[in-house]
Image (cartoon, rainbow, N blue to C red):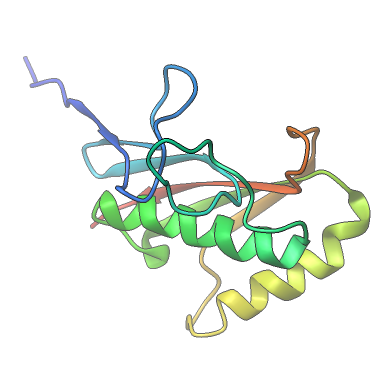
Length: 137
C-alpha cells in the first residue's frame, strides 16, 4: 500500500487568516494550489484587510505579489506555475490588466503559465482576484 501524501496549509505572515475554512494555499506532494488572492495589503494586527487602492493597477500588482508570497511560502516561484486564473469584475479592464500583467512578468524568459480570464462579481471595492497552480520539481 502506498503512503498517502499529506496536505499542508500555506499562509504567509503577510496574509490575514481567511474569513472561512480555507487556506491561502495548500501543498500536497509537489503540487501547490494558491487560493484566490485579492489586492489586500499586508496584514495588520487588529485591522480588517482592505484593498491597497481603488485602481486596477494598484490592486493587480498587490494581488500578484500576494500570489507570489503564497508560492514562495510553499517553496515555489512563478517559474513553477502551470496555471493562472484571473477573475476580473469588468470586461473593460481586460486590456489594461494585460499591460500590467506583462509588465509584472517582463523579467521571465517565458510566460509564467497557462492562463484563463473570467468575469465575476467580487466584494465591494475589489477589481481582481488571481489564483495559481504550481508543480515543484
